[in-house]
Image (cartoon, rainbow, N blue to C red; front, top):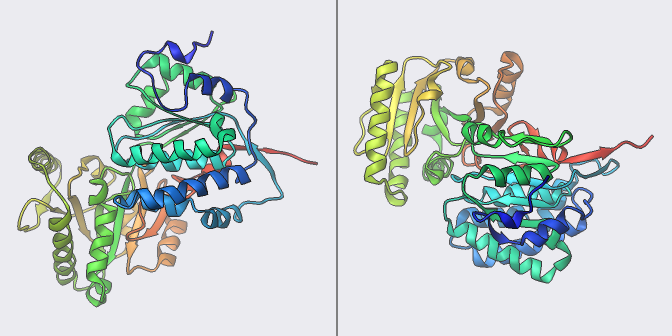
Length: 398
């Protein structure tokens, strides 16, 4: 017997109500990239471009869901296919990337589904802005209300059970621990689960390109956005930096000097973070032969390693904690391209050479290859999943 949602004292409806849930269970799905979904998100974009100016991640989302951008993405899908949403999509979103909930919701909507989104437990002003804007659009488009419910709840097996029982797709962000906890809640036989496990990412830099660039400050800012902006909590954030080319020492000095300038201006390192980062360094020293590179303060720890091996990522930390390795060949990264490796970010390296490495080495991991500054740019293909196709179903016409 399925419990009614209103019996859960710890369930907080931020957008929608328990009555919305009941309507959602009988509402029709939509075709992918439906006019209704695109129009809704375009209206949301217009509001957020005005109200979200103080937050770069909100503005990024607002630009991403403009009508013109969405129609460009729609063109990549075969419109000759008869593809519909699967049904209710239940999203459990992470607490470490505030606006991820917006991207996950928008993807579910564009895939043709009604959506129940579990918002981050941690309070974020970006999430509040997003929810306020969604409510405003829903007031103007009441026919879309059965497609949108946002909730908050602490770890609660009964609530997770309820949403899992009624969904056609369950999308779980937040890493291994969150996934295993959510899997305590069984799914109906035809429900699909999409999970985003703990991953790590790497950055490949060519020293000659670093020395020759006229835009070192822009490069440092791009690196900051890939790493410090999310405090290296995102799976996309590079934690291992691999240097190629000659004159590595000179290139490192130039690069890190520029990065330090940006970090010192924008980043706040709390005393708790500083102590925890030092503890992580000591822990790494007990397991690997490492050298802590000279540093003017504790904003950035650069930890040189003599070799890359598969368990190096297990020693990862955040708050400006980077392993560095000097490579003679791109192929030396193979040991760390396990199924835990998500993204390769690069600068000064021909992406065709990286693609050639992937084809030749055929690593278990690496799902994305993007330029520096783009590691957090959301696309419909994520972690090796084409989310539009994963969250929709095809009707075969013969």
